[in-house]
Length: 250
Image 1: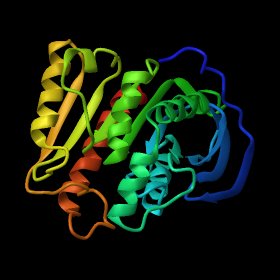
Image 2 (image 1 turned 180 degrees about the horizontal axis):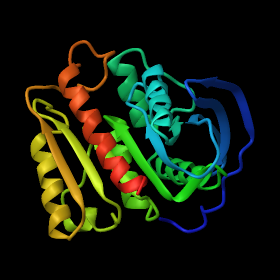
Image 3 (image 1 turned 180 degrees about the vertical axis):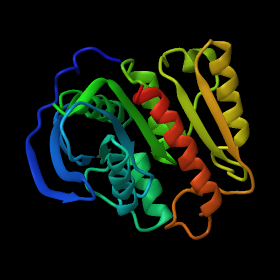
Image 4 (image 1 turned 45 degrees about the vertical axis):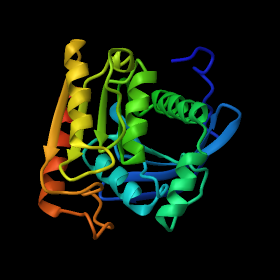
């Protein structure tokens, strides 16, 4: 992680406070580098220090499905910060999504991840030693990037994202990693995931790789009728919660 970025966070505003099913949700703003960015927070409605997650959206942007996932994490006892890498923009078509994804400067993406971690670590409801990250598609790629740039992360979940496959690429990773890859994914292939697993194990790092046969990229998102697979998605969620509970709640 580059020096000089720790402590840049400052919570600037809280809005749209809600309370449902024992959780609280908020729209928040905080500082990332020279920018003020927004995010969505869901947390258990109770005192004490909780484990936390940086939740990273697909290439569509911070849509309702990601917010729903954040709320479900809160129902399971996690403080979830769903970040917005697009500064409020949303894509309606795959062409727009690609343009938005490519418009995020790599350095800014890393700065946003560091800022998100520091924001969570500074919350009175969060145990700063138990912060993880999870993402899907583009967000899965950024989940990997977070693991290589945030040495204080306690867990990382990569759902069908781009990963490194060499000693130098996985070398900076210090936290356990769970990878969920779709058997028929032509973008982030099973072979890519297996090479990542091999590189991690060769370096003595903790990694769990799961292949979901017969399903396509983005099989976990029910808003993607061309790929969503309910049985495999349920299995993936079961695997995710078992992994997170193991590394963030114990």
